[in-house]
Image: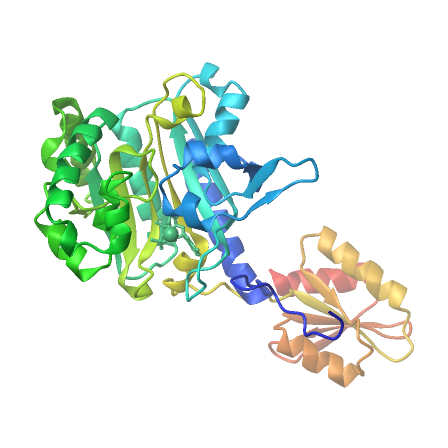
Length: 415
Ligand code: ATP
Ligand code: MG
């Protein structure tokens, strides 16, 4: 289609430098926070075999049923742009024999994810998630550590109006028994439920708690709660996690209706929300997935983790990234040789001084104005055989007899 106006695809966005600086700062904060807690960086492909998500996310979830970007490669293999990170990380854990390493294996990731959703504020088709996974141990300290790391990340990012919802889903056996009980209950009040919930009573009755349909919500208020059906060891595990959070003065609301969108969760589930987001209130969430690695063909292996949306964190954060003001701007006067200016810029940078130079043919007056606009601390003016350094704070200008002397003055002003 010739002549059409080119635009980023629906539900995607471009990151421009101002926003890019905030994202970089957040990513650096993540690397520091998670690194200090023993989490190593991991990267997995942005597309995987479709089967991985069908098995690792769950056939009955919204993600697998409605939200995946799936395509065939030239050889006819079905591939899917990753809608979430845990399945890929667990696949990598198995593929590289990480279950033979000392456990738990602690990993963190950051990158693009893809879901075919109806775009709106805070909801995109390509978005960015940061996440951590701790695989190979079911110690409650890992659940609490994961939750507190996300809390700390959100606090560092200046996220506003943050609340933590917490629950436990027990083990698959408990859930099966409970699901049977819930199915019976839902069938008993089928007429009051939304069409969608009714159609999924048998496949995944727990999802009825997620519904925003008023009739369904009324039915769910009186429904039996999984938290009241936990087996003793799961209830104990949950109590241990809560005690650790209490010790850390982490506030939370127990929410028996909290059902994460993924089938593989067991025991702890949690979600951080922000009032500042309105309808899209989820900032990040996760939980324990003790059955997942086995479901992917590995040995029984517990794990816990979470993912948070970078765009949503930045939406509710009031922290601005600092501007990158150069220490020095190298200006050129008259017919001065640009090779001299270019060499000075490189020398200055190698000394740790942030330096920019004139690259748009402005007059000297225009260059000084530009240097002022970008907040340069000083300007090194390269004239025909002469060098001057101007202190942009005071307006004082000094002559330098050599490049070394000029750079010395610049360093003095920078310090
Ligand atoms: P929601 O209830 O908003 O659909 P979700 O339960 O699908 O969220 P998760 O699968 O838990 O979300 O993903 C973790 C985080 O990733 C979310 O809390 C959110 O911050 C972010 N996220 C999820 N989907 C999108 C999206 N389409 N666009 C932007 N961010 C998203
Ligand atoms: Mg969703």
